[in-house]
Length: 316
Image (cartoon, rainbow, N blue to C red; front, top):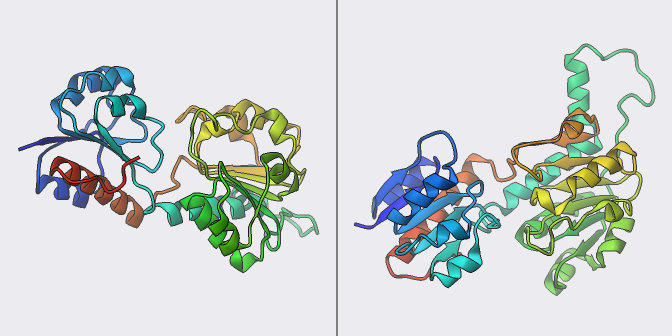
């Protein structure tokens, strides 16, 4: 019987699915495996189901002589050296599609929370700060009819656009390649990155982390945004230069930011934590009961397919 390693706890139904076919080992240490542990353990298995928090680099992959698949429990796969895996004949899969709506919903939750100062208001009320009425008491910003700039027109970016319809929001978008279907479906306008940043009231990030997108938004780019603009990031932390973002927020060059991801997770800069106009989430973009189960089942089915000699469902 072939052997599969799951590097952290996932929904029980997904574990059961794997156990119907393979000898399954699950890491129950309550922490990520260290690199040294991965170097020792990974080479024992035919299939490995990894978390996005597992850094599977060249050193680790080079030790894998009979591993057939690394199934990442995430849509992003920047944590895996895919080029090295390809050279070793190891298939890498991810979990696209099943988390698109959920992640887009998280982006919208952040957008509402920042725009209407929800977290700040909740904190004030709980701490006895609700006093007399004044016209500018916790005044936020409307979302209705505001121009949204979507960077990344993939599955999640499209779901983000889909949810703007009821708010009658003009859509600008920037993508590595033009997406004419996206433009037609959502009446979206393709623009260069600089134009999007200058003209959008809301900027929402939905691109993968690659060499090209690392620090895509640096200080110079962030300064192009409108003074009342809101920045939302549910993609990957390093697509924004975090130090530059802190500087822009401190200088009050934009209205606020909603962040689900950070450059050096799980570390979050103290400067961001102290800011009232920033809403912070601990990378829970896909964290719904339904979606996490669907992700686990998809990762498991990728392993079942490959170790059974079939084509993977979602190879990266």
